[in-house]
Image 1: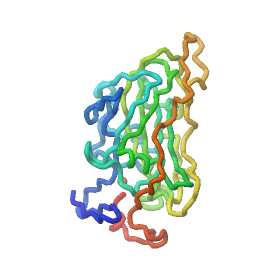
Image 2: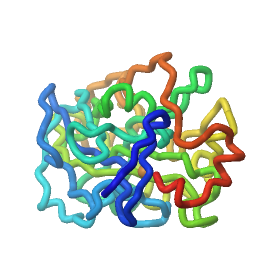
Image 3: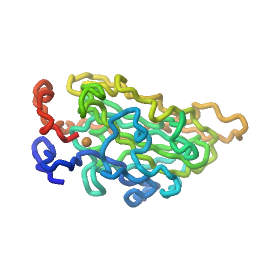
Image 4: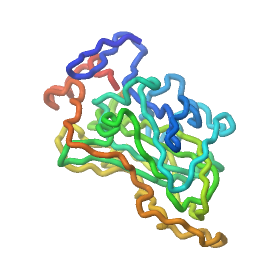
Length: 296
Ligand SMILES: [Cu+2]
């Protein structure tokens, strides 16, 4: 794991053959103001911890883990309607959130734990894309907030166990469609948190399948970050808003509603975002040899 840092560009140029650690993972959860330990209530990271998923059809797109046995991970209690935080880091608490170069959206999904991620069970609870007027990506905001992202659990969720799946999608290689070369395409950084949602809600929102939600040709995944576009279509379904789904027929009617649920509470800023790696001009960057672009 040897890096040479090009300080001005914030780039890690990897000297060894194996180590690339410019990636990221959900490292810890903050519930009711208390930051939990690393990986507490988070399904185990894959062997090299923070490597992204490249193939939208890969089953690892669910949780990016080798451990899908729910009993191997603790389950943390949260109240429906409450706001928790997740902490993104490259390599553990104290390390930076993610490379400046890894610009892209943030999304978060939940699904009932009993499905263990399989089938059309995932509903989106939050998303943050791109503010073209200010040139601020969700990842810029996450970096500014030192890796922390606020997430509000929908207020009307039926109590029970859920997987919460925050995801960063990095677009720095997404100007080529997945499959075009070994690094082409969006990079997916999901992780799964095990939660017990407490409350009096009755909703289990309709879901989509993961993998299945993303296709290599989706406009938000095959996207030229370097073209100066002012808009960005966040991939995946609409965000579920508490109170917007029909309640199951047999449940009671004590549904708490909160119009603010289901949105990220990340604050935005006019601060100039960090410059991506090796990018004086787009054309030049595209011609860089692989060796110099290995901060994937
Ligand atoms: Cu990376």
